[in-house]
Length: 321
Ligand SMILES: Nc1nc2c(c(=O)[nH]1)N[C@H]1C(S)=C(S)[C@@H](COP(=O)(O)O)O[C@H]1N2
Ligand SMILES: [Mo]
Image (cartoon, rainbow, N blue to C red; front, side, top):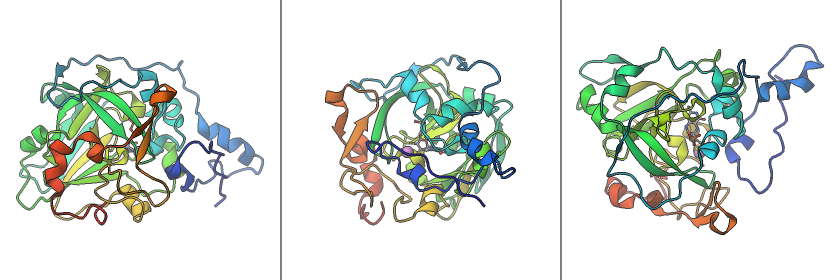
């Protein structure tokens, strides 16, 4: 297999995940095609002009919403993304995720539950009142945003699933469809993208089953039509475009832990005192902020300690990072 050189990344940016992923040539055919392969792969032209899906969602305010924070702009939230199924550069998903078909869409509930069931996305949308929750979002790459999500507590959904007592973990599986997500063949990760939580973490009311942002359905690049949002954990724990939620006995495989276990732990709680092996986690770059506010200290549990610290009592967070 021919390897494609990783594009040069501005040294001011930490983009460790993309830098450590091997990408294979998109067009393995004619020799001359190799030079063309990268630009072609970068941005597959949208058949229509690029247009946001602007379906409105009605939301109610939430007691779990963070207050007093400057929201990141819609533009930054929807053009600076990690969604490796659509490319490894921050701008790739905004150019490429139009390929994702979000209807019809179902989410399968499987594993250790009383009644395994497949839910239609439009049923899930109406299951609970949709809350607007402003959350801090901290990527493991030491950048952050503040995003007004729309969704409801995962715990409300889990109660309806009636998990068995033997279910100790919840696994989240993203769409794995190379037709719509051609980068799946280029990016050297094990697909589908998989994440997981311990059951008590999943039942914490902050864990948000998410359908929208800024009062509209999720743009594809942000994980349409349904994703997780876990504000006290690094961003990669919040799997996008979910197709299956599985209740399991043992700690499930998680994509980044599998890829680099010494760098990405199962828990991945935001923790300024435990550095990534290749960079500090003490500070974060606030996307879109004016320069005098762009570097902020990172908060333990991303500022959500009052609500989640009890989950990790007695654990060594250096070991269980
Ligand atoms: N399926 C899937 N989910 C994913 C990712 C991904 O590449 N694939 N990236 C993760 C990472 S690293 C982050 S920081 C967040 C980014 O979410 P956002 O683009 O909506 O800000 O999504 C997470 N969920
Ligand atoms: Mo991330």
